[in-house]
Structure formats: C-alpha cells, structure tokens
Image 1 (cartoon, rainbow, N blue to C red):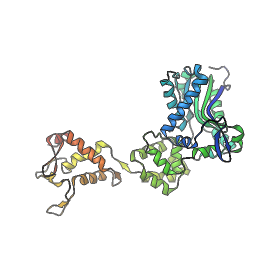
Image 2: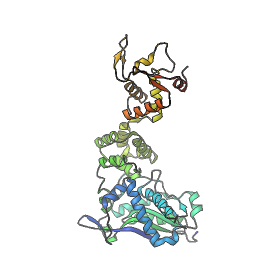
Image 3: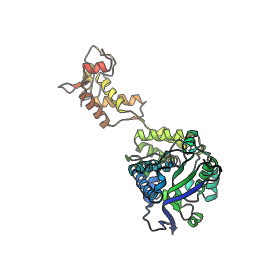
Image 4: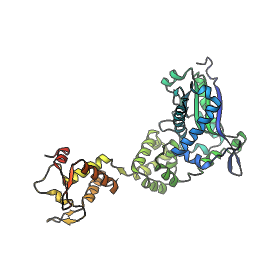
Length: 388
C-alpha cells in the first residue's frame, strides 16, 4: 500500500480518440468509429459489448501486456444495477482469460447515490458538481485483496474527465498502489470543452426512443444496465405503456426489479413514470405453472375427481353447454382462462406455451386424449396432483 494516501499514480488508454466537425463524430487517428454501434452498446446490446471488449483486450495486451496478470479489474462505479462499463469489464475479463492473459481478479467500485437525469447532457461544471457527491467507495473485503496490486478501471468514455478525477481521489485516499484507466473512447480535450454534448450525441445515434429499446430488450444478448432503466423512466406516459406491452413479461419484471434495487421508484422525478410502467407490466406465468394448469384442467378444474366423467368438458375443438346452460369451451381455451384467473386477469400466456405444456404432459403420461378427442387425467397424473 502506498505510504502517501491521496497520491495515486495513473495512466490512461483508449481504443478511440474522438473529435467532432459539423456535428460529425470521428476518430482523430483515422480509426473506424461507428456511433450507431456505440449507442447500441450503451443501451445493453451484448454483441456490441463483446465487440468493444475485444478491441480493449487488444489495446491492453499491446500496450500493457506485462502488467495485466498482476492487475485487478473493475468497471466504473455503480449501485446495484450495473452500468454499461460494468458489462464491458466482465466481457473484458473473459476475453483476456481466453487469450491466456487473465488479470489477477476483479473488484467493484460502489456508488452510494443515484440521481435523475442524463449525465451525458451536462456541461463540465455540472458534471464536476454531480460526481463530487456520488459517494464512491470500495467494499472492505476488496481493499484487503487489492491493496498492493495495480488496478485496471474500465469505463466507456472520458469527455471532461470529472468522473475519472473523482475515482482517482477515492482510490488515492484509500492509499492504493496505482491505476490504469481503460476507455472505449476519450474525447479530444479541446472538443470536450466546446462540445461536452458529444457524449449525448453518440449515445443516441441509434437509440432515440423506446421503440429501439424494445428491440434491444428482445435480443438474446441484451444486458440490462442503469442507463436503460433511466431512459425508460424519462419517456412519456404513452411511450411507456406501449413499451410495457411490447416486451416479454419476464424482461419487464427484470427491469422493474432493477429500478427498485437502485431506488428509482423513490426519486421524485421518476415516481410518476415508474407507476405507469409498473401498472402496465403484465403478470407472467412460468412453464411449471402452465403445466400444472394443464393437469388441473384435464381433471375438470378439481383437486378431487367427481363421480361423473367431468373430463368430457374438455374437447379439442367444440364449444357446447351442459343441461344447466354452462358453457364448455375447448381444452386449450379452458387452460388459458384458468391461467388468466391466476393473475387476476392480467396474465399473458401464448398458445405456443400451452401447446408445449400439453406435449410435455402427454410425453410424461400424466394426461391422455380419448378417441373422441376429449382430454383426461391418467392415474399417474392423479398421483401427481394428489388426486385419489
């Protein structure tokens, strides 16, 4: 550990150095920088994360290959919900390891305070003021492990350097050894003074509204981050309602959980839009619940068998009525209605999910279909439902 707390030896590296002419962003060294890909990365595109992690790995091994193995790596500070930089640091850890140059380990930098608003739209002085009150810290357990080792702090972009300055102060005050700050991009200091909004411009080259977020959320590689949560809550009510209806329920629930974890639902500027989003997110049913409902419906919706052949209610394709006028719907429709009741009428389940549960139940021999097209529970199925 350094004997001089507050003095932290630092170095900086980046894949790109950005400039701007006539609102066009370019790399001053002639590299091919694509703002659209960067924008997708900032809002959770996992393919873009891996792309930049590969470029950072190449940069680090070329310039600092001899020290990577001794370094501990961390993404820029976050609270509970990771930042885009955290996604890069995780992917970079994997890339370096697969290249047989693993770092010594990883650590995290905690942020105690999250605020409303888009940091990328702020001028330099406002950025300095905001980062000064973020409450940056390292977990005690991490300090004991990394105290005598070089640190590798991964972030997405440096525009004014105010966040880096705050991190340097935090790490230096803890008496740590030294740090290498690795960025996807840094901005030419002259440009950053005149156009600090360059960051906002590239952040939103692709993502301009919730339509693009909805598309990203449904990609297999999507990785939720804090910026995406805030972008949703900063949108208008109509857009939020449309977005909530457009994305899978499990993804919407993941987003809700993240918002609450970071306390966005308690921030005055976000309370109203959080309520709109939460009130329009559909309930979801997992495959086990759907499977169970298939069995229950095949048993006539009863835990115990009735003396008559109640399973005759559930034919594949006909809608009939009983002597007392009760409507008897097709089997799959009965299952769907029962599932809706489980969620108070707000649940969503696709016919494909019901078909999959029926196929599973058939394969396991717990339901059977009669020659006439009716469904019933088998003895094995009755045992599974504890039906005698």
